[in-house]
Image (cartoon, rainbow, N blue to C red; front, side, top):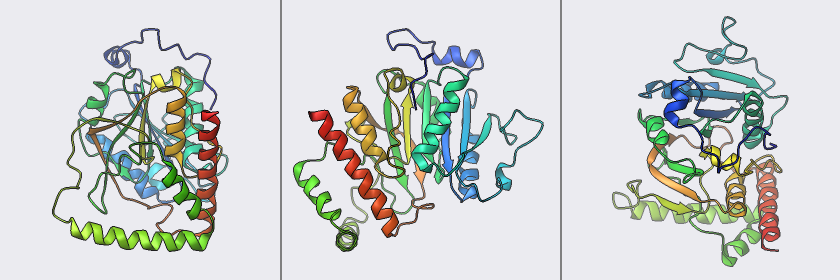
Length: 314
C-alpha cells in the first residue's frame, strides 16, 4: 500500500478522539479478511455490538472467496450505501477482492480503499475473522491511548484452545541459535514435520506439568516487544503517518516478522498491552496440519524476513 498523499506529518497536532466522535468521523476501523467460514465473520461483527460506545466504529470485511456467493450473514442491503450491510449501530461494509489476496493482502486492499476516502482513522485494527471482542470497554480503552506513543499494539489474544495469551510472538529479535533452528526446519518438509512432532510432544508434557499453576493469561503489565501476534494487530495513525505499510511480498505467513522489521526501520515501538483483550479460536481457516503447500509458503515468508533483516543491517 502506498502512503496516501493526504496523510499529514506526525509533528502536526491531530484532532482528539472526542473531536472525531463529535463530527461523526470514524476513529476505529476493524478490518477482517474472510475466506470461507462466514459464520466466524458474523460472530466477530456480532461481538462488537456490545461496545459501550459504538460511535466512530467501522467494520470492513474483505471477501477473498470468489467462488461462493456473498454469505447470507453478510448479504448487502440495497437501501444502504454501496457495500454496507446489516442493521448495526456502526457501518459494516463488504469489499469483494478481485482474487484471493490472502490475509495481509486483503487487509492492504481494505487500507487502500480507506485511504482513497480520506485520512485514515486514528486506529486501524487488522483481525482474523475467528476472533471475538467480548470486552464491552475495549474500544473505550483503546481511545484513551496516545496514538503517538503506541503506534503498534498487540493486545492479549486469549486462545480458546489453551486459555493462554498468544502475545507476544517474540519478545526480542531472533538470535543466531534461533536462526539456525529455522534453517534446519526449512531444509525440507520431512525435517519440518519431524521437528513439529517433537515440539508437540514437548509442549504436551510442559502444559500438563504446569496445569493449574502460573503461565495462564494473567499478566496486566504493558511491555515493549519485538513482534505481535498477527491474529489481531492494532495500528495507530502514527504508523502510517511515518511511512509504515503492510508488506505483502509473500502471500501468507510471517506477517508478525515483517511488522517487526518495519518497526525497527522506522524506530517505532511495538507494545503488548494486556488491558486490551480478545479471544481467538485458532486455525479455523488454514487448519492446524502442516501441508506441503503451507510449508513452502512459510519457508518463502521466512526467507523474505531474513532478507529484510540482512538488508537492514547492511
